[in-house]
Amino acid sequence: MARTWVRRTVRGSARRSRRYLQAARALPLHRVIAMQKKQVFADRLLTQMPSLRALKCFVTAARYESFTQAAEVLCVTQAAISRQIKELEDSLEVALFERTGRHIALTDAGRILYNASYLSIMNIAEAAQAVRRTDKHALTLCVSHTFSALWLSFRLPSFRKRFPDIRLHVMVTEHFMELDDLMEPDIIITKNPPREPEYETEPLFHDVVYPVCSQSFCERHFQGRYVKPLDLLSHATLNLSLLGRAQICEHVDWSVWRNWFQEGDGPDKLVENERLESNDYRLLVSQAEAGEGTLLGWHHLVHRQVEQGILVRPVQNALEFHDRHHYLITHKNAKLRPEYLQFRAWLGEEVGAMMREWRGVEAETTK
Image (cartoon, rainbow, N blue to C red):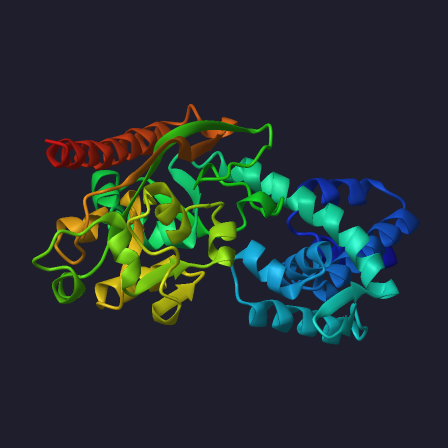
């Protein structure tokens, strides 16, 4: 009677495994009871286990010793990271970090959890990545915030209309060199390519930079007279800050423009009291559109506004850097997939049209 009851209990708790039941029927009673206890123990561990999302936030914050950096890497807000870790600490009833101002460090308990969680999460991430790559219609693209907003966003509708079966996941970050191992995009577009051996790099297009401003600003300050390159510096300018240039590995600013054209016929410094500076290039573009000053415009980011007349070029001079590029970085596992080849062809067409337009404008200017 006891043996029958145990077998029925095992059959109920392990209904999903026919092999388990077949083995239980052939085993002695004490072995069946031991198997049942292990199954119940495993079920209890699973129900008590913290959420994978919370563990992922914890592991990333521990790696970088920063909630802010973890938020950047995982493409979420800092508040979301803090909330997940607070819930994790509450569920475990133990502090995982020592907090001193903005600095955080693992406690002894946090270190124990990190050592176990990191390896487990990496195994899960690698398995998920292998499974994800079997999805023949999925692509993960990683770009900067500025590139996403000013280049990619208005082109995406045509791509999706042309390739409706491709599921595109766009991941936006400024920290290309610090992408977490949990994220492994198929494609990256950036000026500063990562060095990981699993990625292949090729130049996509070179840098072209020229001043732009609104039509109203141009009419107020430059209309009806011959404007030389350095004359722009006598009026309000919009400037990408040192932090902003560092974030995108960019060296060009108004001082570079001044030095390039300096011939003793213009001011030696910028108009300090009429400058707006920001590390957010998207903000500077919007301020240029609003008539707040002249901005150094990268062709790939402002050419659409120039075409539409939202921005104008007060002078036709430009800086062209054939040795500085945006790069297309491709994961080796993605190179032969049909959806990648389709995306690559579409991207080549868009970039080709953009640069042909620039060559046409430049040829017209030099006539």
